Length: 113
Image 1: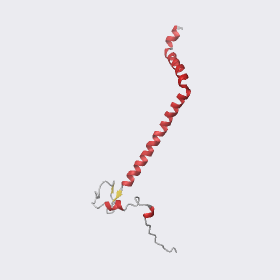
Image 2: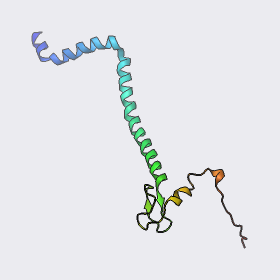
Image 3: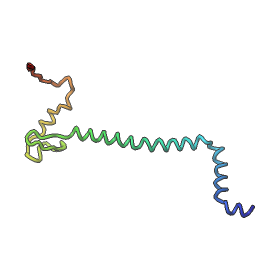
Image 4: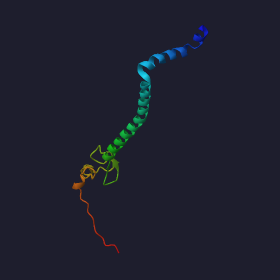
């Protein structure tokens, strides 16, 4: 019997720990921990994708294109870095900042033959 205990000391230790922990916490405790870890592993990448999408849309709304030369800027300066044209007019005339009811769409009617 003594040789069995010496050979399987780790098995006996873990068995005693489980016999003490299971009645105190129950099997629901371990299932809930496993479920929460699995939930975190699924939700953290989803949260990161949502944050990247929000950041992309934020920077997309800040991008200005120069009407003179066509250079693209991030809207940090008031003048174009390429040709020096005033970019302030572009940000004021930005169609994305206006409400749809404030925008005017001009349509020309043409006869189709």
